[in-house]
Image (cartoon, rainbow, N blue to C red; front, side, top):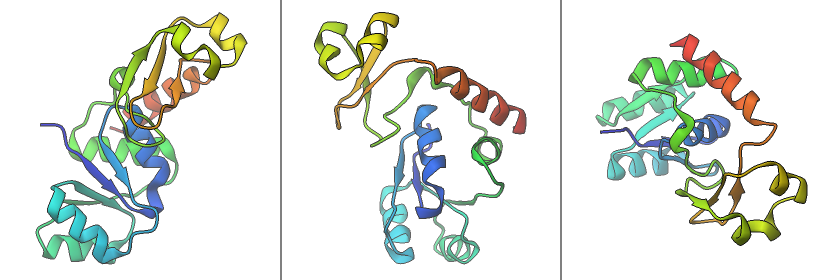
Length: 155
């Protein structure tokens, strides 16, 4: 079973990368420690944090928690992947914005939401079922792949 994550306010970028690699990662920007602990306990999600005190409190309550170390996207993602033995595959991405499911979209249905140059240059598009954001593998894709390859070397 694939782990689901609860990510604290210090690791918003890590939440996005986990989503890009297909993991369900809820991000709580403004939650206090007790709210995070309660949600992790109730949902069974793995709590990801850089806060040592929060890590200790979670462990005392037998909540699955991982103290994330390292600086930078690839180092943190690689550390999580190594610690939990995760594969980093972007082929089943979730919405990096809201964590919703992405589904393939027909070009004609999203044409008014995509820049004309991108619409003409690319064939594959995905839309988030929750927030409606549209995604495609544009010029940024090579940077995404590069970051994931670097993270995989951290594993």
